[in-house]
Image (cartoon, rainbow, N blue to C red; front, side, top):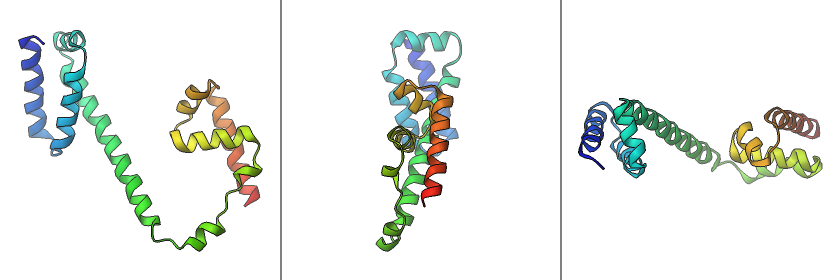
Length: 142
């Protein structure tokens, strides 16, 4: 990596250390930055977009951390729930048509309609429709 690119990265790093409190997040993002292709980094520096690119990476990483923490909080809050309640809430996925059950299952795992559409090569609007129909069918069965 050339010296000017390295200096630009270090300058942005120092600025981020003064702005953001989460040092681990900053270090993780800058490790990812150093793993990027050198040509890409040089291009960012020349176009004066390096700071914006790193800010976007920090934002996305921060959102990912918040999602992980919220999932942990949710699972911890349900940890004390009596097992009886789990038995009472029996979601009848096996009573749904196979396609609806699979699409709903993938949606619950992947989190977005686009991710399901990309994985299955089904149109996003069709995935949305399948999930909505599956939800309606489950409400009828419960």
